Structures are given as structure tokens and as C-alpha cells.
Length: 297
Ligand SMILES: C[S@@+](CC[C@H](N)C(=O)[O-])C[C@H]1O[C@@H](n2cnc3c(N)ncnc32)[C@H](O)[C@@H]1O
Image 1 (cartoon, rainbow, N blue to C red):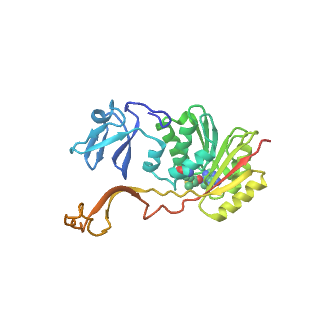
Image 2: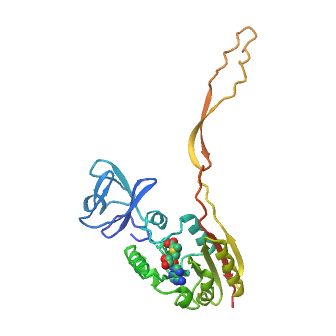
Image 3: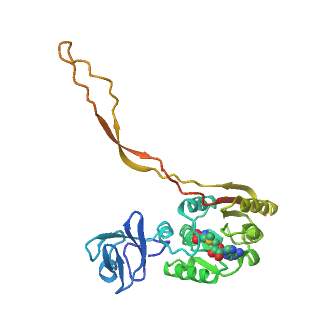
């Protein structure tokens, strides 16, 4: 198992995602002799997990069952321990697309936070790319480094504990893309320019407030970035369900032959159909995504 590469079989040391239901999943560190309690009873790692195929249905000690899934960045995002606010997959998908991330890309990121975005970046740039991620909070930087090793993606990432606004990303002229999720991204714009390759690259900054966006756009333009654009991604998930609708009553049918009595009108006829309904509630604002291009110099 690695967060960047699929394996068939669950092994000792893996991080597996235990799926209890659509809204209920948890990550489990698989250990010989280990046990995990669920509402369906205990899962014994040696007997129930190690050697099983990912996706297997595992019966717990009280007779209930769970599915054990291979980890992905998307599953990690909804199960990871929060040390900060995190980015979710809707924003992450747009960031990945608009930063043009692909295998081999070199990316700089700050701050690392809880590593939600970092895992998605690592999966996109593997097996030959590299992520330079900067986090000034020492415990967060250390915890992220430990997780990258546990998730077997540490060869793809360098974690630096520093203030990106003062010290930059610790690299120059190597990055294809830069991502910022910090309170004052405009202060990191000059460092982003230094870190990007001479033949240019892409930048994205995530900010919850429009005042942050304004300052970032000003800084990007002052440093000769081009194609500056800000967007917000709003997700509407439609629910698939069965609905019953009353059939309109147009009165009794005409008799089949002029002599036959008219058929009685069916009063309460309904039709049942599968359809989708738009969400009654939607996730609120997450943040604005500002993108820009550094032109070739
Ligand atoms: C909102 S979190 C990032 C979340 C991350 N994008 C994720 O998806 O998990 C912001 C992080 O930036 C860090 N940070 C803020 N300002 C910074 C700076 N100037 N240099 C480095 N890290 C910084 C904070 O300590 C925090 O961990």
C-alpha cells in the first residue's frame, strides 16, 4: 500500500480505510496482533485484515460487517485527523486541474496544515515529481512528515519548517506550480516567483476573504504574473430517490365500443419513478481560488 500506488493485498504496516457506512469511515493502522473496535465489534488485524484483498467484506466480532478499502487522497481527506482547517476534494480537484499537475511536476506548497491537499498533490505528481511543502508550526510539520512516511510517499516530498513569507520555499528555479493556503499569501508572492522555473509556471492561492484576494491579485500583478483570475467552486450533489406522483384525472375513459358502458375513473392512480432532487442544503463558502501564470523569462 502507498497513497500513490495501488496494491491488491492488505499488509502489516498499511493504513487501510474501514468503511462502516457512507458517512462513517475511519483510517486504521494495520499491525500484527492489533485490534480495532467498531460499532459492529472488534476487527482483529492478523486474522481479519492481513493477507485479505483490499475491498474485502470483513465480519466483526459481533457479527456485523465492514468493507476495508485501499487508501486514496479523497478517502484520507474525509477521515484524517484535523490539525487545521483543510481543503476538500471539490477545491482540490480544481486546484489540481488549474495548476496542470501531472506525473513529474515539481510543486511548492505552504502551509502543509493537515496534509489534505499534500496527499492529492503527491498522488498526481508520482512517481517522478516532487513536493516541497513549508509549514512554520513545528508540531504540524513533524506530524506531516511522519504521516508521509507511514503512507509511503516520503520519497516524493520534502517538509521544511519555516516561515514562507520570510524564508521562501527553500528552492529556486525548480517549480512548475506553487500553492498557497496561508493568511497573508501576498507576502509569499515574491518567493513564489523565485521558486518557479525560468520558463514559467502556475500559481494558486486559496483565501476565504475577498480582502485577501485583492491584496494577492495586486501582488501578483506587481510581480508580472499574467492570466490572473479568481474563482469559487460550488458543488451541488443531487440525491437519487424514488418519487410517487399522482396521475392527472381526465375523467372516465371513452367506451371501447359505442354500446359498452364507460370504464370507471381511477381516483388515486400514481406513478412511481426514480429521479434526482437538488440539495435542500449546500456546503457554504470555502474560499476563493486565485490563479496566475508566471511567463517565461
Ligand atoms: C489552513 S492550513 C492549510 C491546510 C492545508 N491546505 C490542508 O489541506 O490540510 C494553513 C497552515 O499554514 C500554516 N502557515 C500559516 N502562515 C504560514 C507561513 N507564513 N509560513 C508557513 N506556514 C504558515 C499554518 O500553521 C497552518 O498549518
